[in-house]
Image (cartoon, rainbow, N blue to C red; front, side, top):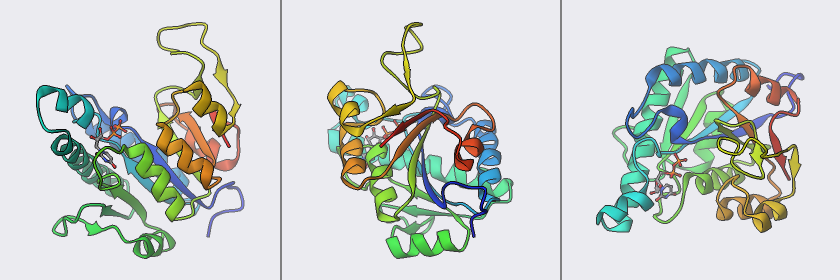
Length: 238
Ligand code: UDP
């Protein structure tokens, strides 16, 4: 059972592939182990954790298809990239002593279980971190949308997006020093202002299901734990 010190009982975490490495570095396993140690601190509080991992450090279908590869094939390649990341993350979590299961949206039964909602919930209830791999299993979608979908399906209390910046800004904080960070936002403002929280399909799905989103900086140690304990960390969208 989740400890009374936590605000959330069941969370869906979304990590972009770029958190794990880059298109040149691929997967930096030491980073995965560091994030896994962060996750462990939350897991030890009894919080049920689902994880959706992107594939942008290895391949994004949209940009790869510009080389001439058919878009649908390129998107499947992107989905396979998320499976590669998921297996690496599973290994890192296991090194930290956290029990995990990988569930794939595309069947690959030699290496992971197929995604079945009831099975995912059973694993969560047994205290296993569930890694949802392969996105939604459909081309033309993103892992942000997969995260919104899985979070809705498993009835997570919140969708937490871990990024390299500490929330949502009205500009690009990397290039614009005057960019202002939002503490709180309404879904509709994210959509109408075209703010870069998640893609519009993902935000719409969260809005329809009244699923709150939190965007925070995953690379700052301890932030995830503070957020789970109820501190206002990053930007809240509701
Ligand atoms: N993808 C897809 N359908 C999905 C999820 C992902 O086709 O439901 C493909 C798509 O090509 C995408 C790639 O997988 O570019 C990697 O996912 P994403 O770009 O969301 O990764 P991130 O940016 O989070 O690292």
